[in-house]
Length: 148
Image 1: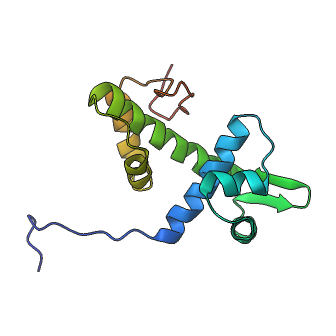
Image 2 (image 1 turned 60 degrees about the vertical axis):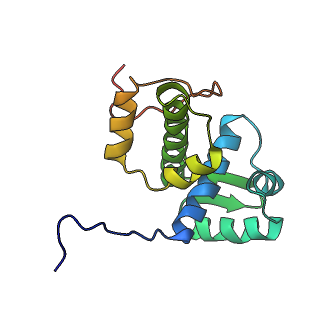
């Protein structure tokens, strides 16, 4: 029997975080208006190109990307995950920079963003008064909590 005051330790899945990082990278490359190339993804994620190809095949099977010789694009599901991850990280950057007045720690942001659910993200966005841009001047994807 667990006491309600006991802490519960949670072990995330590295595989899920890995998938999210690829989708976020593809989303970010697309946002910049650049072609989504294997070499660009590899450079952004600091992995080898064969690893990118292997993951793109997995993501294609999971219907998160359309991957073929013609190129790489996000499916509706992949777009949703990529946008959500980008929203999480940019809201965390606003939190660190504007609200907490601490230096933005990208490694910390990356560690936290994978564990944020929609309720938490919307509450954070509301607390920060629905910022439209992150400290790096990139658009923050809107959420259900953003009415205007």
